[in-house]
Length: 303
Figure (cartoon, one colour):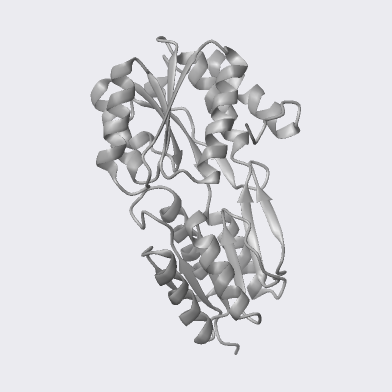
C-alpha cells in the first residue's frame, strides 16, 4: 500500500478565523484529506522570511506537495521552489515562477462588477464606498472591477475608496467603515480579510449596507449584508491535491478560476434584505453576471 501524500499548506496574512481567505483554504485541505487520505501540515503567517523557512523545511523533509496562499507568499514560494526543483509547489491567488509550480489565479472581476452594479442600484445617498485591506495587485484589481460596475449604472455616483494597509485588524476596518458612513456613504464593499469583520460590525450598528467578500457573511449582520462575493479558495487546493495524487500535476501551469470553474460564487440574497435587493434588482444582477461571464461586458483590469 502506497504511503499517503504529504502536503504542506502555508496560510496568508490574517490566519485562521478570518471567515474568509484563510478559512476557505483550510477547508480545502481538509476536504482533500477526506477525499484522498493525505497527510498535511499547515503554518500560520509570520513573515516572508519565516514562511520561506517553513516551506524549505517541508521540502527538505520530503513533502510531496507544498501549497502557499496569498500575495505575500508568492516571492517566498518561488524562491524555495527554485532551490527544490524536484518538489511540487502550488501558489494560490497569484501566478508564481517555476517549472515545478502550479498556480491558480482568479477572475474576481466577474463578481466585483456585479456587486458594483448592485451598490449603484441600491444607494440612496448616491455615495458608495470600498474598503480594501493591504494594497496588493489583487485587491486593486477587485476595486477596479467594482468601480466599473458602479459606473456602468451611473457614472455620477460618488465613489469613496480607503485601504487599511493590512488584513488582520478589525478595529482599523471598523474605523474606516465608520468614517465612510459618516461622510454619507450608505453601501460599502469590503475586501479586507479580518479587517472586514470590523466593517461588518459597523454596518450593523449604523444601520447601513455592506457587501462582503471571501465567505458568505450574511449571518454576521443579516440586515446589513446585501450579499457576498465568495472567493472559493478550497477549489484550487482540492484540484491541485487531486492532480498530485493521480500523477497529473503539471508545473509551470497557471489556471484561471471564475464562476464557471467554481472559483467564485455569489451568496444567496437573504429575505432580510429583500426590500433593498428587490426581485427586479436580483434579475438585473443575474443578467449582468451572465454578460460578464460571456464576455459581452468587458471589464478593464488596469486603470
